[in-house]
Image 1: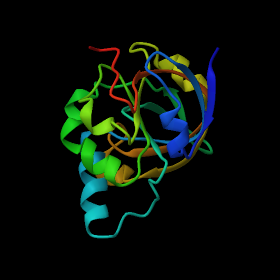
Image 2: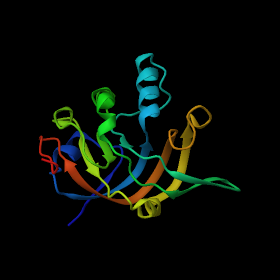
Image 3: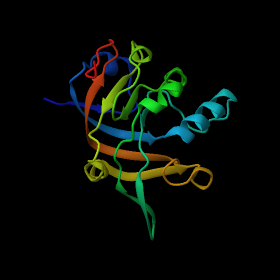
Image 4: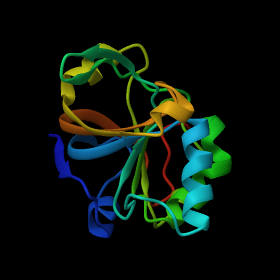
Length: 173
């Protein structure tokens, strides 16, 4: 049976999850890749980050986006490899991030007692896009471009698996 969670996530939410649990996530999530991670940590370090990350979920994703008459639409939102974001992990978790979504796993130790890593299947970007109900905002589009910008997405029943839990258990081990 799947666990249903809504963002922002709290400490109890993550501590109750175990590696292997299926989660259907709803609420606001933020896409971020390498450049966005650097920008987030730089701005947070100067006290100038314009959005709150306490309880947030970051999705390692560079979505494929189509311009529409009303703005943008997500066509595909598959995960990118998370391991290359390891240098930014401790900094993001220190800002209150409680969940990371991606593929391939990350270092386990920083998650312990703080957050969880959710896996989403690579190659299933169109499935992920079906869970996106709306684009709430896009940050740094001009500076970073479509794949590296932070897309603020409202998702509903986004199907995920807990791959690294807050107790140090990892499906990748």
